[in-house]
Image 1 (cartoon, helix red, strand yellow):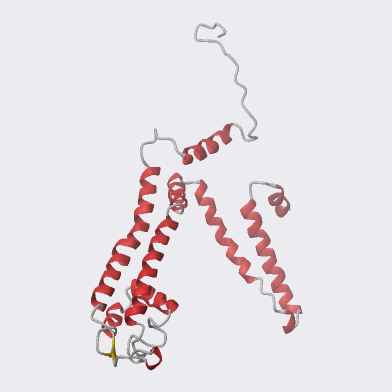
Image 2 (cartoon, helix red, strand yellow; image 1 turned 180 degrees about the horizontal axis):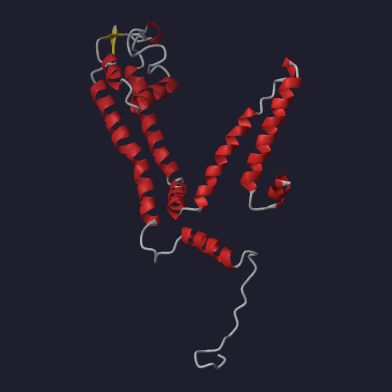
Length: 238
């Protein structure tokens, strides 16, 4: 009886999902008792994750939470441009790294090894990404200095590869990537948050959403409210 009441109520969509998930898990538990090992290929226990959807109901209760969520959504409009700028930085440094450090011999005991080198464009991008996270970038820099043995398959005419240019190369990359580029993400989010929380007299799209929510309390059917002239303070019809 309770299940029928919940299903007939249009305002309990999240509760409907949770109830259906609970009964689905119960059916699967019953199925495990009577099925063979071959029939246990489909595992429906992942449906328990839908219980976390109850947290969505918190968005209806707090105006501040909705502002933070709306700030994050609005920031996505500018984030692709920041990502494009970072991609250009990685592309330029990857090409330079392939030309300067691509002939260094691979040594599994050093930071320039089979999984971490400048021999191909993809490997160079992965190495720069690892350096951007701050993981042992100084060891990679020292492994790219001059007087390093050359890879026989690189076709280099010299006996020594590497360059002292690695100091400027890695220090400038870490400075641009870690201290400037990544902070642009924070700057974009802070700029949108400041715009959405400034003076309330400045109207924006979030004000329209708030108006729709409040108006729904007076006009749930989203039809209209008929306004008619009423008597003024003196009792005369206006």
